[in-house]
Length: 68
Image (cartoon, rainbow, N blue to C red; front, side, top):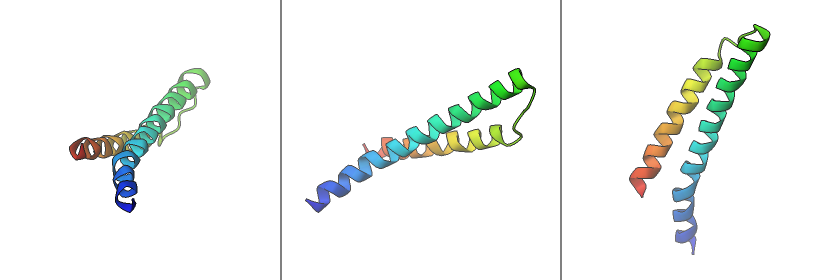
């Protein structure tokens, strides 16, 4: 039983974390775009943070794909 729980965690946790990181990166990009275009205010760190979130999402997705 313990082995099944461990295998389920190894299979699903990286995929879920990658999805959350990708959604966070897309949200930060969207908010930065809206603020820049509609309110003429840009968040200086938004592009860098979104880039790092998306990169880590790709790393985790690749790891989950290799395990399957």
